[in-house]
Amino acid sequence: MSSRKAFALRIDEKTMKAMHRWAEDDLRSLNAQIEFVLREALRKAGRLKEGDRSRK
Image (cartoon, rainbow, N blue to C red; front, side):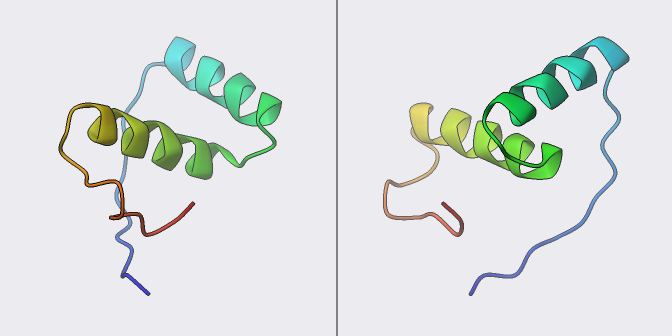
């Protein structure tokens, strides 16, 4: 199991609300949704290998 790091994220209110709505639509927590979006962006940019997924 990979280690996870905690950090503070400063984000504007409009973006935060949109992410929260998206998370609710996908039945995820806000934290899980942010992780999902980041992983997908990294994968699409070729910075994360397909098999390199610590969480699904």
